[in-house]
Length: 553
Ligand SMILES: [Zn+2]
Ligand SMILES: [Zn+2]
Image (cartoon, rainbow, N blue to C red; front, side, top):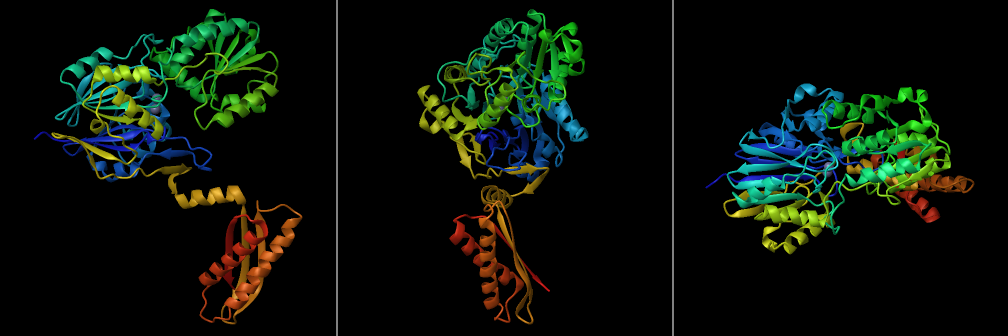
């Protein structure tokens, strides 16, 4: 009997973000990506959401290495948190490792991981896994599909992908290699990106954006151009730079991550901008505004990014006016729409002309739509399939697409975060789930639980009412208070009478409670909370957080 291979999904199935899976055979684990998820408005004060790293840390002695498929935050963003606890090599392309290197260096963790570069088409052993790296197109350079050649056959992980037949760097997805694996020895299990599984058709090629940008630059001749984009979207930056150079402009990078990524990409030769056509933001005053093309971050409305500062009028470098054109070369990621709209409005208020992706095709997705998924399925012809990387509805759509391609119900498994599967001689089966625990980061990792988050939501929605009382338990009487303090509950002038009513109710409750000579401070606090809560609710129909503070003496 051949050794079985298990896959534990630690994040990324059911929500977009925090992608992480653990493949295990013969007692050794290879971690496939370790990303973070950005927190939405429903998680107040949370900086990031991590995959279930606790499971990896508990099984840390079996972790052989991590493969980083590409350098997006939802694939490498949680590595520093994991490396604080574990030490192992990380495999990835030169560009991917460049960004991983920076991330670990910032966290002071460079000594914990040996970074091992893989090249397109490489095939070698990582522990008991025979791994092959296949080039794939996506919205960041040098991503890899991973084929794991195991005793149970080939497991193919698509990574994030689109099938761009005309990629900016000419590096196409190696469909021929996938087809040859699909033919012989055959692909036993496919794990594939589901982000756009509910969208019909084909995503347009990244290179189609270039012509649109060039004509935009022509239409805006004589004006200063400011283009917002992801700092990691090097192929977009290439096309922005090409359009700038073609219209006799100079590219000016603004924002730390933009400058860093442009430098790294130029060093690695994945971004080509002639030296005379690129300057740092410090030099902006030396350039004729009509020849300037600023590339900057903030196209997602991120609070501290360059575009946001321009919209608020607080940018150190740029003061916008009616001579400026700002282009959002991206779509808002779901959840960021409100922030993006507010930045757009701020820019318009400054007088700038604002152009975004719903008006002109200045963006295309990095994830394949249904036709591209069908192409992958038809060349891979997997025996088993698990849709990954998507919200739950995307996973279901991808499952249905696989049925449409002729896969039977039994051979497609719908999994969620925390689920575990095993590929053995008899096929793919589910093992006991390990749970998909979310780890919330606010400042330092691991200090946030659901209680704190619940409290923050209550405070944000209804404010708080605190009642402070000093008592003498021996004599059974109130020494001082109750004093009521509230924030965010009700406006003046009604506030005063509500606070007095709460104080009176708590005083009555505690006076009667203190008749019992065995009563404890804890019980008094509970009764104070109930009495205050009842009064608050009766008078205002609101549910602020009630904080009773009962002290002896
Ligand atoms: Zn990606
Ligand atoms: Zn992703």
